[in-house]
Length: 288
Ligand SMILES: [Zn+2]
Image (cartoon, rainbow, N blue to C red; front, side):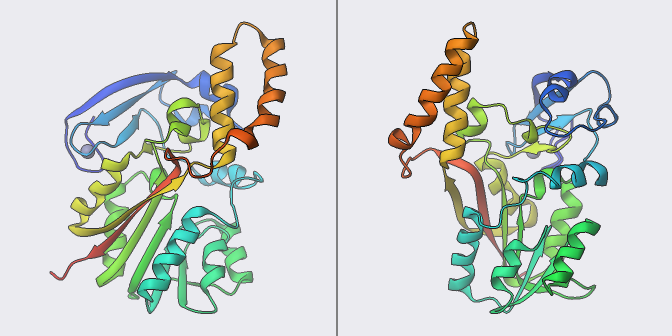
């Protein structure tokens, strides 16, 4: 399998996953077979850039996206990555900001009264939300000195085209902020989050892969940011450990779930050093 981020053929198959295991725990009832070629799919890791990519899968379509977007937890109004981006924007004070994959406009809504903001969005439903919030859309020929894309890259089939679009829209010395789920986080290594697999996600990014985008675009890395581990994700990790330890004793395990739930606020430390769900890289376009 050729790597879709760096183009290398030095990719190694690290696992094979049964489609049935995804179907069993997928959070929405939808025909999933059409996204898979066969009864299983493979996970490969590139030895050059570090990205993990799934093979024998098709990208998410509008029906799947619309079903998932209806889930109450899918779009959050406030997120650690939004706060981080606002911190960066407050320091750099860009003139024109573009968010690619703006969803319901929760991030741009926070900025629209202070900055000139525009959005790129493909879902018809989300375009209505953006219109209601008076958030303007990107237009052909416009360029920006700050571009951000939160939780978008892991869904995109053609990474080269997407990154080239970001680069074309970015002015020289402008900044590009990209956030994706953090594959180095114990939340992803210890738990099985079905939404981090196809057909929802096509890639998993560790720190090396996320930073490799700078090489692909010939841009400079200004900063790398990791979200701290959130209590809800820590709770999922504890639940996964409990399942592993007590899988033969379902009744007692349920009693421990209650105990864990009651005790987690006491032993969760919000200053934990482990990386959380999301990480981001801030890049700057160099003078050519
Ligand atoms: Zn690669």
